[in-house]
Image (cartoon, rainbow, N blue to C red; front, side, top):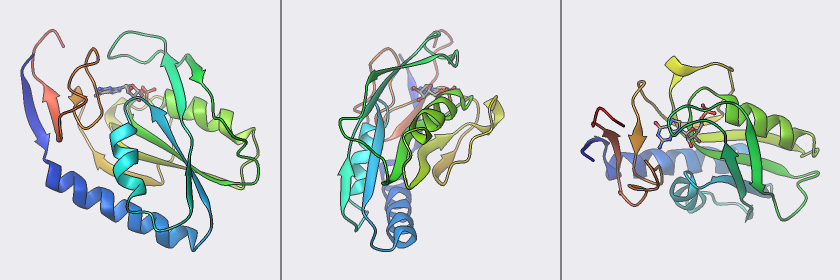
Length: 174
Ligand code: 5GP
């Protein structure tokens, strides 16, 4: 399926480094639990934590979102839960993209019930034109238009996650 490059690897790397530095400053030496949402955010999270100069624990959340490939239904099921308690911890939820906002809103609400000391959201991408539930993104990489994005961890039918840059799927069927 044809793809058109959107954001190159160098631009991504510079922005991710900035976000890591901001997180390092904001948390002022406190311990942190970084929670990437699988699978889309794995590459972003792997690069981001390398720019966070704090004691960082990493724990993953696996989710299944009901709906088709490109449309979130808002019904989210946690398929792999955290392996440790986050009670009393400073937590950053790491997403690949906030589209309608339904997934992050659900996960934020779920994690908040576990009484973390604080809970923030980092997302590589945001599509504000698609918002159905407004969510606060504390650390945002890039704002994008209403196009379907792949690469740098994001897939279309499980493909393209390994592209080192972000691209737009240009085929009409996508
Ligand atoms: P939301 O619940 O915010 O509508 O959707 C969030 C999830 O939908 C993302 O974590 C991602 O899995 C998927 N998604 C939304 N837009 C895109 C996109 O442009 N490209 C890809 N690959 N996934 C997307």
